[in-house]
Amino acid sequence: MSGYDYLVVGSGLFGAVFAHEAALKGKRIKVIEKRSHIGGNIYTEETEGIQVHKYGAHIFHTSDKAIWEYISQFAEFNRYTNSPIANYKGEIYNLPFNMNTFNKLWGTVTPEQAAAKIEEQRAVLGGKKPENLEEQAISLVGTDIYEKLIKDYTEKQWGKPCRELPAFIIRRLPVRLTYDNNYFNDTYQGIPIGGYTQIIEKMLNHDSIDVEVSVDFFANKRQYLTEFSKIVFTGMIDQFFGYQLGELEYRSLHFETELLDTANYQGNAVVNYTDSEKPFTRIIEHKHFEFGTQKKTLITKEYSRTWHRGDEPYYPVNNEQNNRLYKAYKALADKEDQIIFGGRLGQYRYYDMHQVIAAALQCVKNEVK
Ligand code: FAD
Ligand code: UDP
Image (cartoon, rainbow, N blue to C red):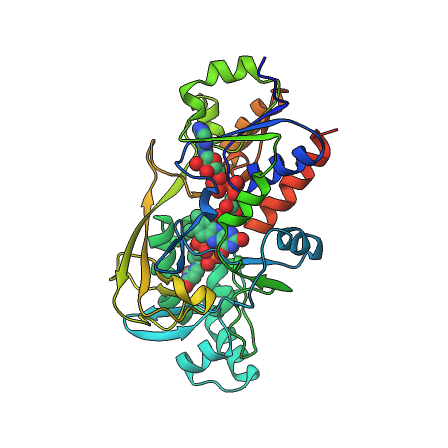
């Protein structure tokens, strides 16, 4: 046997929280990570004095005080409030959908006027209960906003018509009858000063944790299964089972980063391109997450792609069909005493960071005695 209590596969947030908490309980842990660095998708890297969010914009937000205090042990957070803007064919709108958006689009001034406009436009649904993303969007904000700010962006992001997507995806966004551009409703929000990687480094910094990067579990699956009595697996659950029931669907991403010799490229950290003319979904200007004053700037264009085996799986596609297949994999997983499946890929769930931390803490509580 290995001499370790746990093998943790994946050094993302789930794996790191699990390893840290298990180490605090006196366990010995080995972490393997197939990428060349720790941190999973929250990994940030400094270039030109700017923390670059290498796998897309990450803003921490939660209403759970315990989770906020938990993450704050590992970094100091700034007061960044996410307020992305939408660019539709050169027209600029505030997000999430709020009185500023409605004013720009319709000239409405009072909440009553905006509510009346939405009510008038949602009449096309004839009172039907929304059953897909298109109907949910129209029901929440009406047809104009759906057409300009939702339809094309969503179809670029997910590669499917809005009618074939689940309604919950659009309910992630607040709709407000106030002039408030805060993208989240949560009590706590911010960006860790100096980036996210330090958080994972601190979590994994124990004498009883050994980390190996550039190691893929599947290169030696049989050996790991023989040597470790408990394995926390945060990779893709369908891959773990050799895709024996079929492939789950994921979305992959492609990032193009440029260093520009200008201090301020777009005036905001996140700009969403909501028309179909632009092939990317958003442009991130990293310095604005930390109110940077550097002379140069780094921007990243984010493109959404169909996932094929071998690509990085960034998003689970939680429609009915995939959730059904996941359930079948989950039934297999439940029979495996040796393996604990966790995180966005192991649990095939559209988790945000605070939810991953909560799930990992719960998992440690259940598993590590
Ligand atoms: P991951 O970060 O995916 O970690 C899994 C790790 O396992 C990876 O490092 C992977 O390389 C490794 N691994 C996989 N298979 C193997 C293998 N076979 N062998 C070895 N290692 C393996 N959340 C927010 O709260 N706020 C945001 O603003 C936000 N923005 C996001 C933007 C984008 C573009 C994306 C994709 C996600 C965003 N999230 C955001 C979600 C956030 O990234 C996740 O909730 C969180 O990072 C998930 O952690 P995890 O450990 O489950 O998964
Ligand atoms: N969305 C949209 N227009 C926007 C921003 C978001 O239609 O300008 C929709 C889109 O379907 C997206 C979903 O809302 O997938 C959730 O957005 P969020 O910003 O939470 O997505 P994430 O940051 O997780 O990619």
